[in-house]
Length: 191
Image 1: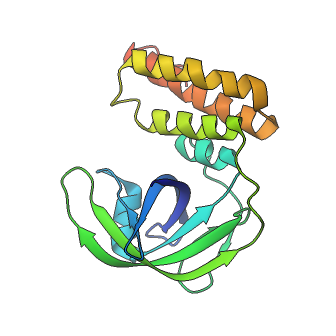
Image 2 (image 1 turned 180 degrees about the vertical axis):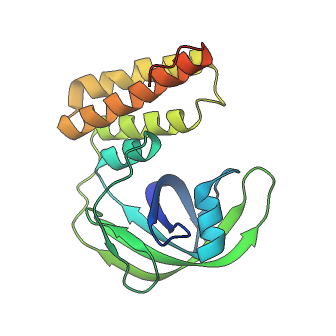
């Protein structure tokens, strides 16, 4: 099972790098597998720590992919790292094992601290749609345009029926990224 999370890693200057990641849990460890090249991969290998943030604010997922990286943070408790201020829960991680790969390195982390901050009440359909669109945006260069169009058409139904202000804002950021990608492919980037 893949869990959609926000991972904060440490840049070389000590600042936070915020990125959405689908993670797995296996044999008591957390698996994070960034594609190459990746700022997150570089940071995780260098610092050997990470914070796994669980949030229902889908703007963080969308913002991380669309250049909106300034989210309120606080220092982690047990490791050198950063926690999203609005995280419902977080886990502080230390790197245990690395499986190198030319495309997608597997990083296995041990949980050294875990804390719940607020109850998670569940995602509505619009929040799930934003997360799905965020995954598509992260793979625009890999997927055919027809697949992206088909997925967006379906996901739009959930946005129209169940989105609040935060979900609508996140959706707009991601759709702008899709439009800019296509314009860039056509040589007409407006961003």
